[in-house]
Image 1 (cartoon, rainbow, N blue to C red):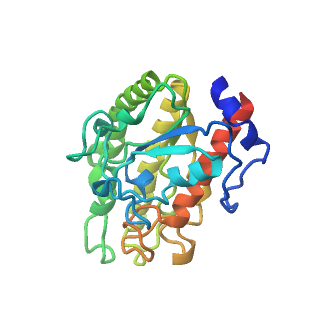
Image 2 (tube, one colour):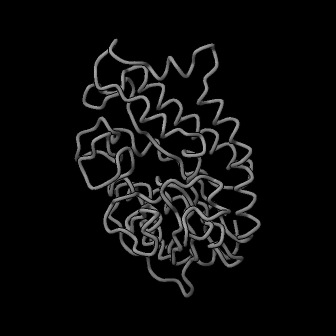
Length: 290
């Protein structure tokens, strides 16, 4: 546990642990607010969820995304540079004209870093769209069958091949923010077992295959985080019953056709809030356990 983080959180910890469903309220201000930097892709940025961040419209970043929720709970000062469509390469290079590399937000004074990355590096979310089948079987093609033809799972192989790149990401964050605690936020539960075709257009075997691939990416993120002294924030458990097959009012992730103002197959406002609260709770738990 970094001593600076423990000191900065002393006042916050006195208010107790947040539950995943608690109402978000600002924590009492410390003498010096935590300096929090949020890195990542569209799962972090929550594209189209209002209000949008006017600082970089190309990133489709929401001011109600999980980094902003976590910052409010912790009373932290957030620098949110998450950007829709980002890959790990965009942490060190500009993603859009006028958009600085995400690593540029890190400094030796940073206390907390969160990162969600890998979905675009591994083409996982392109796979989601490629698995859509409006019609019932056999009128279409199973992405599960295509991706596992020949006995090798192409998607899992891509995830495994990318794992060393994520290790490099964590090392780079630690170099640029040597006093920060790093929190790796996973991608959660998108679709329940066997799916819900035709309400969401994924055949049973493809729904199971897709969530299995997301789970595998989560396992790689968790293992790599643990190997590099970072904390993994599990968002799967908190999103059970809130996947794209849930009733519209219960969803944390929107379906192929959104029912709230949010991008398809991305967190909506309740989903971002839930993840933000979970991240804040993880920060507090890490501080308390130090």
